[in-house]
Image 1: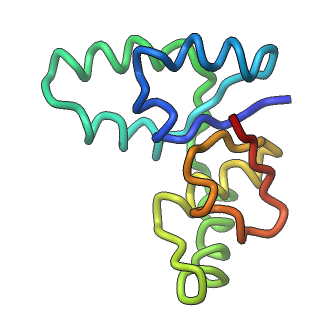
Image 2: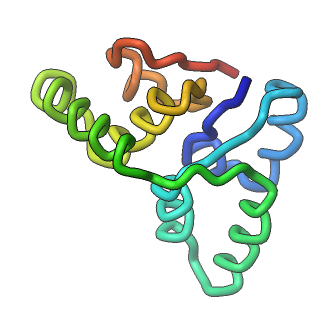
Image 3: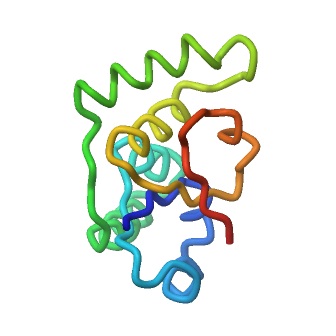
Length: 122
């Protein structure tokens, strides 16, 4: 089984490797381009970007493809007005649904209403 690691998990940057080894071993740890971009956007310097990208190279990268984009659009249509689903979260959830991944996130409230999405708690 594989798990997509949400951006907020990576915000623990220094502790994330130990956390994942303790809680999620032997799952395959994945991220998509939205999570990668959010991490770079939240960086404070070019040096930090290099450190982040070096760390992210250890994870299975899942690009956002046409199927994922179609699923994200469907999720936005279904959940944006009544549950407040945001664009980035729609792409994160769609990546999980399309690729049969569990989602590891501290913000389960942002995703708990999405039918079929498997949430992994810490």
